[in-house]
Every structure is written in C-alpha cells, then in structure tokens.
Length: 535
Figure 1 (cartoon, rainbow, N blue to C red):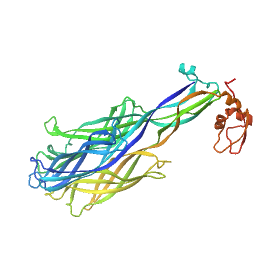
Figure 2: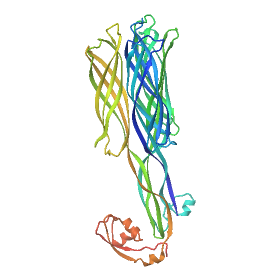
Figure 3: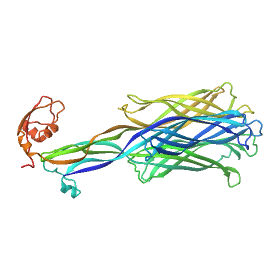
Figure 4: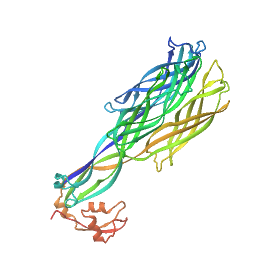
C-alpha cells in the first residue's frame, strides 16, 4: 500500500515588530534661497530604500523627504520653497527573525513639523511608525488516501480500498497563499493650464495625491485605477509678485503584468506612494502651460486562493497493523474580505489670530488610526482625519497661510463570528476630501474614507504524513475473543470502537441492528472480530 499526498503551501507570521522613530535635524537654508520669515506649510514623504534581515533583527534604511513652503518679506516675490532630506538607519529587534527570509516593512508618517530657529535655519521633526514582519512559509505533504501498490504504480485513483483497509476522511478548507511579490506602477500623465489661467513663470509648490485607489485581478495581471489629485502653486509670467494656483483630478487606469494571477484569486495589495515629479514645459506656442506628471506607486502583492479537499484523518486495517505518522498542520482560512466606505463631516473653526481667508486653494488630509480592537460584531476603529487647508489671505504681506484641524471618527467594520484570536490586515485610503468656507470663522470639511480589511482565522489539525505496515501478531490475534460485549463510553464512536476491536462499522451495525452510526454513552454493543485477509 502507498500513501497519496497533496502538497499545500502555508504561510504564517513568524515574528513582527512595531516601533516608533523620531526623525529630526536642523537644516540650513541654501545660499540660493532668501531668508525665512514665516513657515507656511511642510510636506513630508518617507522612502524605504532597503530592509536587510539579520538574526533576531532587521536593518531598515531610508530617508525623509520634505518640502517647505515659506514667506520671505525681504524679496520682491514673497513666497518660496526649499527641499531637503533626512536619511535614517535603524536596527530593529525582531526575536526569531532569520537572515535568509525577506522582511516586509510598512510605515506611517504620523507627524511632520518644521520650526524656525532663525532666518537661515529650520528644525525638521517627524514621527515615523515602522511595522516589520517576517513570514514563515512551508510546503506540507498532506495524506489524502491510501491506495494499493498497483494503483500507485499506474498513477491512478483506486476506487475500492485495498482488502481489509478502512479509511476515515475529513474536509479541510484553507486559504492558500499562492504568490507574493513586489512591483512598481508608474503614473505618467500630462495636462495643461486652462484658458483662464496665465502662463507659468516659476513653479513654487505642488502636491500630487493618488486617491480612490482600486485594484482588481484580471487574466492580464493587476488592474489599478484611481484619481490623481494635482495641486500647483506658481507665479505668472506677467506679474511675479502675484500667486496663481490650479487644482485638478486626473483619472488613471493601468495594468501591472502578473502572469501568476487570475480572477479567481483573492488579492491583498498594499500601495505606497513613492517618487513624485511635476515639471512645466512649453506648448506649441512656446508658452509654459503644459505639466508633465509622474508618480511611482510601490506595490506589495499577496494573492490567495481558497481550497477545499478531503484528507486522510485516520485509517486501520484488519489485515495488518497500520502505524500512522502524524504532524500538526497550521493553516489559515480567509474569514472575510471587507471593503467599506466611511463618510465624515465636521466644522473647523478658523484661528482667531489668523488673517482673513480670501480664497481656499487646496485641502489635504491624513488618516491616523489611534485604537483598533476586535469586538463581538467586528473590528472597531477610532481615529482622526488630520486636515490642512491652504488659503490665500486678505493680508498682502502674508498672502498665503494654512489652517489645520482634526476630525475624530469611530467606525465598526462588520465581521460576523470574528474571534479574538483571528488576525487581520487593515488598509486605509482617502477617497475624497472637500472644504467649503461657511463664513469668516468656520470651514466645513467633508471626506470619504476607504477602509479595507482581510480577516484570517487559524485552522488545521493533525495530518497523516506517512505510515508503516506491521504484520499482525497472529498469536495475540487468536487469543482475542471472537465475540465481545461492550458498553459505550463517553467520546466513543463506531469508528474508534471498530478500530480498537479489529472489526468494521458495517459489522457492528449489522450485528446490533443499528440504522445509523449515532451511539450514546451506556449503549450495549456486540462486537465480532474480523479476520479479512488473514484466512
């Protein structure tokens, strides 16, 4: 006899570490830039350049890129920008981490601020949360049935079991991770200033934010779509002392090649914005009106496939003694993939010491999840949407300023029958944000947040990996009584009784006139020893 097996690929979180870093440095203003009188806004982006796994730790290298929008009263043009970077290298303790397996690192830039030390030096300070994990993968050979040697040699399924062999099967349902890889998706677009806007003399500041991101597996690969929100602040050709701004949304849609994917798989794709570049160039008339845009999105792709099959739970033979070799199998099953939308709205009070708002230019936001917990009904989230509103003020000496505000929110992601031991992966994204000036003292903010979660529950159990055939001790077998009276004990089943007393379920049912396999504690049974294959 031979054991037929099925190979499955398992992946479990081996170790993880979550730490918070404070990145700070004092940066000198470049000689080519004028003095800073007032910092209007700071924009920060993090780039993870390298993660190096080592024994019980991981080395993370990256940099914080920042862009300052500031006011200078001593120059004929009051608004200027400067850029810089703060490199970092951090050794993070990760117990049980190994150097031969990849470590996945995700981050959240929770805060980025700039303080003015003097007119030629600024202090940059940010809080960065790093989430590192290492998965342990394994290929398991799970026994699914025992067949005769002839059937095994012919590579065919044996419809009838070998003589005297009885097998017990059970269904295993799992979510198999079939693929994990990293890739890059590049958004390349061009757009031009509308007719009502003057030509660009100098680009002062820009923001490009992918919003409403959606991914879908196709036979061609991974389709990625969304909107790229573009905001530019510039000085016009005819009057460099004035400010002009333009904001638009550009839809994008493209495919990342993934030959191992198909529509039946379940995708878990983390999207992290990377390099962003915007440049003005002349149009056909030689006027600086066309904008070339490029945004890089880094993709961390995991694909899963749900699978159910019958596997061998137990077996015995009346012809020989079967010694089954078991192994504990730890697998995961996807409980649910939930994508929900949260609409929030609130009013932000304008600071009393602020200049009057003449016109709102642009609004941006970041999501901060402060608390998350598993409850009876699902996953409860508490957090805030941090909003920055850039506006043109009524004060000509300070023509540009920022109003900040926070909007708290609570949300329950409904997951039926979720357990405290379940694991989940949460992704958040701003689908849309809009602001309206109600009066001189109050701004209304509305936003749509996308919340996506995959919830996994642990499953598995003992599997048969091999077996040994041991000849029956004929002397001991002959000493066993041919007919036995037995009183059913707690936890007994017809299978366990038949296996123990060298008989079969059919024999027990026939001898005791049982219509079904259900038995109860205290039931009295007659058992007849079987000698199939021994005579």
